[in-house]
Length: 181
Image 1 (cartoon, helix red, strand yellow):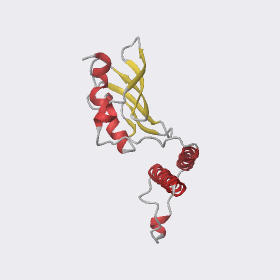
Image 2 (cartoon, helix red, strand yellow):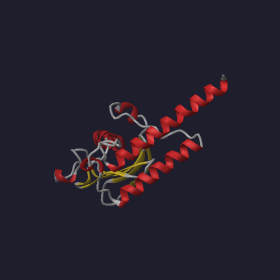
Image 3 (cartoon, one colour):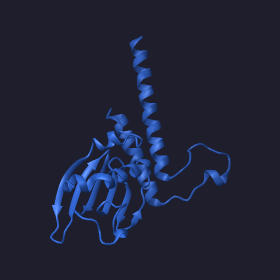
C-alpha cells in the first residue's frame, strides 16, 4: 500500500513540475496556449532564437529541479503586493559624486538595479512615475530573463504580471526606503 501511495505522490509531483515548466515556457514564448487548435494561423508562430534559447533553459532548469527533488521556483502572486514587498533585500548601495545612488537588490524572485535620487528630476520624463527613479532594470532569477528596463524612458515595459507589480512597488517606495523621505 505504501509503494502505491509513494508512486502516486511522485506522479503528482512530476505532473506539477511539468505543468509549471509548460506554463513558464508558454509565457516566455508569448503564446496564448500550448494546445493544438487545429488551425495553422493559431498553431504556427514566429519566435526569436533568444526566446527559444530561454525556453530551453526554462525546460532544463525545471527538469533539473524535478530530477534533484529541488523545489520548483516559487511564483509570487502579483495580487499580493505585501508578500512580494516582504522579500525586498537591498544588497548594495553606491553613491555617485554627481548625485543619486545606485541600488542593487532582490525582490520576489527577481534581481533589480536602480538609479535613485533624493529629489525629483527637473524633467518629469526622466523619472519613472514620479518615483525619483531614473533607471530601473529587473530580471527574473529563475530564467535570467530581463522583464523590465527603464532608462529615462521605457526600453522594455514590464513583460509579466509579476514585473508590472514589482515595478509599481519599487516606484512607490524605493526612494523613500533609500533616503528616508
